[in-house]
Image (cartoon, rainbow, N blue to C red; front, side, top):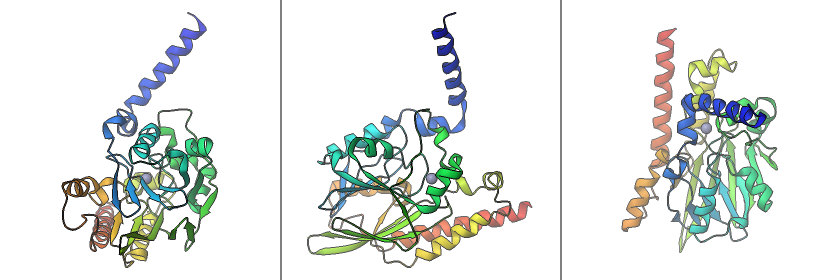
Length: 295
Ligand SMILES: [Zn+2]
């Protein structure tokens, strides 16, 4: 057998093993089926994500800002969405990452290498990239060429950063990862200015008992940390709730209503933020009480 054939067989066998894993299909296969035609949500905020993980584009008047940059392996879709929205991907000056998981950082290195885009990540997640890279789940991406990065800026609790015409107030909201960020900023359309709010990670996958104990959180303290993060930003005024994943604010259903045309923009909703944060608080309290019963 040739060395070439040996190498082929070896790598294909590895691929089969990877495909048998529970995460491979969800994260990596047939991503094109998740493509969503981009649309303007309100003012200078556009949706350029897919039907699973959100990406928001803000046209700051002095360059484009992305909040998140899609799943690993979905960068071509993101590029297509940016063009389709009427922008040029080379104008993306900054990417703010909601947290350092593989489904939110996919385009980061491509944009940096191709366009010199500056990368922003919460300080604790930047530390985990260095010390505990496995927490990023990058190993599940299905592409051995995928790698992590040193951000250009590590976001700290309370940072206020100006991107073009947009001033963003940041907070750290650990729980889903230790470096999730929350972000608040004004968005103007015509005469109307509203406050946008963003919470960078609600998933309980990283707060399950087995997961936490495996990474050394024996007492499941992370769950309390997550509850504190929710209450820390719960009372922010948010009229335009931007999701981290599509289900957070039913982005596709609201987009359909927007497309059909209605008197009030369906993304403007004074209650969506509190309603969703409170529902996550209740779900977490339930998870905590169920775990107590078991032990
Ligand atoms: Zn995540």
